Amino acid sequence: MGHPDITPAKMKDYLVCLMHCAMLGYSVDFGVIYAMMATQSGETVEQRRIGYLASALFLEYDPTLGVLLINTVQNDLKSQNYLNICAALNVIHYLQLPEAEDSLLQPTINCLSYPKQIVRKKALIALLYFYQRSPTLLSDLEPYLRNALEDKDPSVVFACLSVWKHILKEHAATHSHLLSSFYRIFEQILQGKLHRSFMYHGVLAPWAQVSLLEILFIYRKNSVG
Image (cartoon, rainbow, N blue to C red; front, side, top):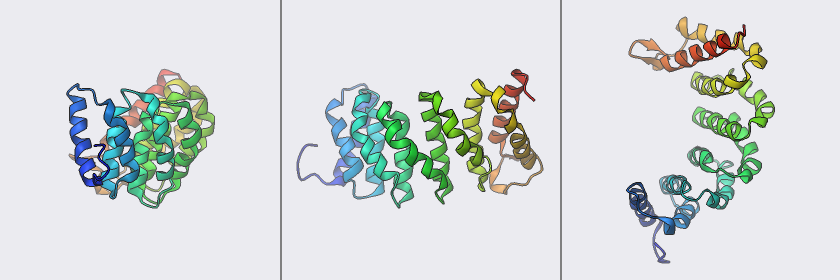
């Protein structure tokens, strides 16, 4: 892997083998730096995504190495290619470092206005990870999470439900004003106002309905509403 003439395509294959070795319990410390280099040097989106995937796996063994990835993730969050943005958002969960919040929070928030819904969904999940690591961020994130409940794409709204479900477990009493929004979303589903692509075995948006029921239960448990 350290050969100077190795191609990005070959490096991708080596990283896949290395991930397999890691899952079998072998030490792959020597390959961590190559995985991180692949996130920058990959010639295709696929090669860079493999680099991110390997980096995410290897960071479990040494989280401090995540500082080497922050600059790459920051650049990819500003990319014009939405696949690069998605790959960067996926790895945020594994960057368990204070520096990640300082450098990546605002670029992640900016992704909430990206035209493609898949980017907005992944940005919401990344914001959940930021909140879980630093609950004090809630007041800063709340306006964006409220706006996401009004997103034009139902799949983004459903992703936001999962984020609010985690937040309300600790803060239901201070967010009673959101009940009307959750009732409205539930009503839209029950009245069949969604595209048939959200139908699963004859049930419209079943996982969103489950999330909404869990949210309403949290409110009831806290005697709210």
